[in-house]
Amino acid sequence: MNRADLEALVSAVDEFYVRNRRLEAAQRTIKAKLAAAAGPGAPDIATYVAEVRRYFSGFEREARAHLKDVERRLAQASQLQFNLTAERGVAARRVEITQGVLSRLAEPRPQ
Image 1 (cartoon, rainbow, N blue to C red):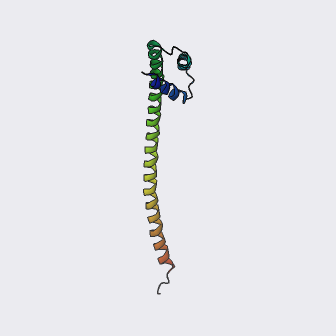
Image 2: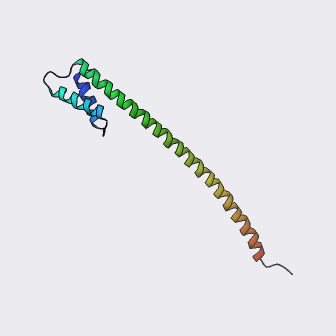
Image 3: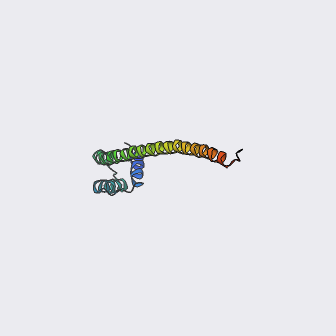
């Protein structure tokens, strides 16, 4: 990984609110090494990348599970809306029919 790519990765990780001690420590360490004249060595970069991968792999699994749950709940809500719309149609039709019957009762009848 070249320096520009590493700096971009460090910047991308900084965009997240991370409260994982291992990743926080790795982030501080790599930033310090980037600021130093010698810069980070290959082992430093490998350690940092491994820690970022470990953290974000778990984060991605959690986010995917949450997305799956939200999609399931949306499908349930959609099905409920479909069912209620159909039920509303039946109820509205019943109202029309009963109003028709009641209006016939209100008509004057020959005797």
